[in-house]
Length: 261
Image (cartoon, rainbow, N blue to C red; front, side, top):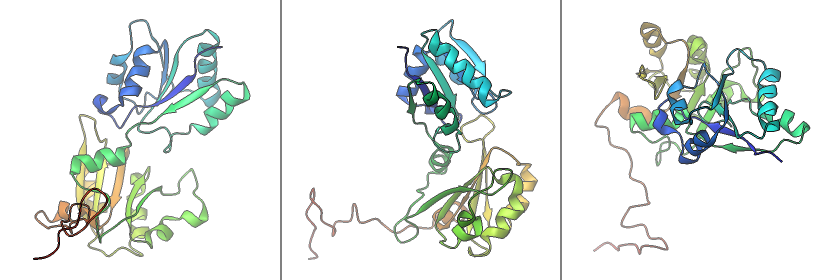
């Protein structure tokens, strides 16, 4: 029996943001099939000399599957390298289905999604006490539809923190859908190619973010991050509510509450 085929999350772009396990998988791999349009080639530096590398950008599902199966049949250690985290807009289920059909074992190694990398660059939390305790990850309907119950305007009614993938090319439509529920001054950050050398962050209010994005020439590979948790990006110095976790008046199993004098 051959080795499990490993679906590895490459992270958002910075080659140091791959997990230790993901790096080990690349170091041990005999064959790597990677999404060349999104995965930086700098990550391939972790591969050993002689590893066979295949860029799947111009390939169909059947062609990538043939490469994975060929490697497995040859007894190779095979890595399918995906951008970000494979389980988020990674189109891995259809690949796993084909492997399952042929009884080929596999495993998924998680990666850092661009949403969390962008929040780290901003040094902002996606959830804040008394501001937002919910994070919605979604996308606008395009050539790939979304369920009717998950239309952007419907999700916006919660006014939670929202990170919108694969939609910046329809920025005006995104703003129109969000504006049905979010106030015009809601903070929005558009994060372009987070973790790459040409990374760019554009911050503005909902009412003028589309104009700012057009001025920046951003029309692909960007996240749209929406919500009051980003208020301090627009208004530096604004203080957030303190959490209960480190409040001296809040006790838990590891610390007694300090009573007022």
